[in-house]
Image 1 (cartoon, rainbow, N blue to C red):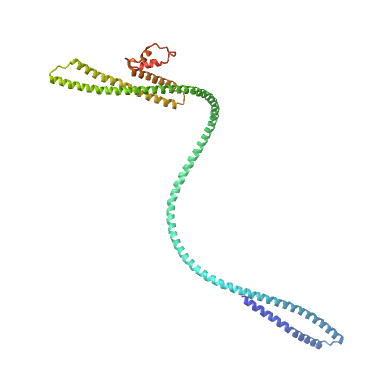
Image 2: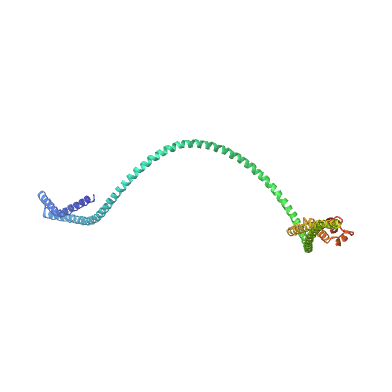
Length: 384
């Protein structure tokens, strides 16, 4: 298309240039023909001829000036067209390069189109599969629509339940307002209870002071109990030594009995009479001494172990005590343990102990509602 335009422009410019070259000759010929015609048709005087000639010259000069101006314009147009032609040629070369690039792109696009055709075939196959899946889904949707209807029914039911719950909520809000009023009353009661609590705290401080005093007394009692426990330990050691002596005496008694039996056998073999009183006395003394010692030793050990265990438990209770609620019971327990120790000492010393005579004396008790230590010891002490 651009080549045709360029050829048309070149032809037009060539025609213009040829026309400009032929125009002067044609003009002169036309002028001559016109002069000849005028001379032939109109007889003129020399003055008129000169005047017409001057007029013709002026006309020619004007026409020549116009032609020169037109020629200049046409030359400028020709130069402009030549420049445009060069620009057009450059653009044509550029377009040719772009056309080559477009041809290469077209080849690439053809390859891509082939790939896209294969992709389209695959997509068509997938579309067929999706159609089958869609049909299956429609069947499932029928089942789901039934489920949706059921759920809609349940939703309506839940909506009714929600309305009922809203009514209940309004009732609860009324109850909350009532509870708020009650809470205000309870707040006033709490203020009153705080005042009572402060009074109770003051009383608790007083009780703590009393408890401190009682703890000091308990420490003194613990020291006394510890001293008594040490004395009891010494007595138990003495009892252990006496028990060892009794065991030795038992062994000696068994040896004497064995010797007496052998002597009796020898006397029987010799035909002599056995002194019955001596044998009977020895047998009775041996038989009575052993049970008496065993009977005396067993209660003492039992009482000693019992008192030791009670003293240990009492010490733990005194250490772990945090209130004065059980002070009276602890005092009774301390008094019982002390009375038991007195009774154990009297039993260990036997009939020669002066404790029995001291306990037998008259008692002067300042508090008639409380037992004295002497009366407690007399109750625990076994009779003579």
